[in-house]
Image 1 (tube, chains in turn blue, green):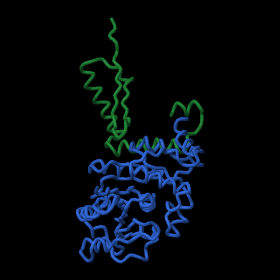
Image 2 (cartoon, helix red, strand yellow):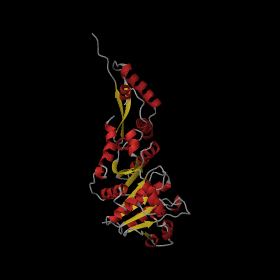
Image 3 (cartoon, chains in turn brown, orange):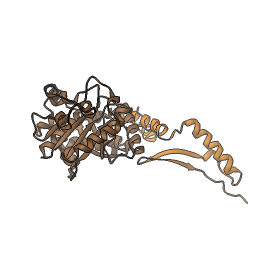
Length: 264
Length: 84
């Protein structure tokens, strides 16, 4: 069966696209799937750094589309998880170095060889975004519970619907339980009501994301942490498993997150 | 939400404010409907309907709501009953 291309996008920068791509990619590979993650943020490459693979890059996606190397040669093998690969972005070029058609061709060339192809989109709605969704079979929209991030997520969802890209699933990142409890943060239900797309995962705010990213060892490598498990839950939902949203260890955490909505 | 606020006599939480502001701005984003356009619509609907039926102009409620990703314009127009 040919692989599935899933684009991870958000509109707003800094909401966790690259973190979600690296961790869901790692979790899918740990579940036994062959995975390639593509950094579509040409000129601002970071997926390699988040995954700890920055020293292993020889060729990048621009080398591939301009014919300086074969696709296989540009793929970097992950150092932690077998069957996880990275197709890096070029750092010294810009978004126009790859066209949407070329990106779709790269995705098509990868489909026969991998179960999942995850594309890490750049922020914005310009060509980099158009490139990133060109080959997508599905889209994961990442947002945080802040007005600007939700506003931009809505715009992205509208553009995806207009381009007939989907299904669209939502990852709500960086939920802070104490702020939700105080009534100072949009709840999961608030965001779902506003955006009206299907939820595929909730990631709590966690300092360990910064610590693990500092080390270049994605937190999903440790599925015993609550946040690592949240990424594994997303990976399992991606491959079609039904995983209840309440499967985080602190059951009360999610019940309170959802419950606050109902109290008003 | 407004009714609850009055009932409890308290300031809305920042979460409630965020939600209301987002919903307001998204209606305009998704449809291009601004409060000004809504006012114009109201006047024109009243003008057209008044030519045919007796409506209660003060009771007209024109609102925009969201159902999933579909935005709906809801007009509630009370009619005056005919007096003998």
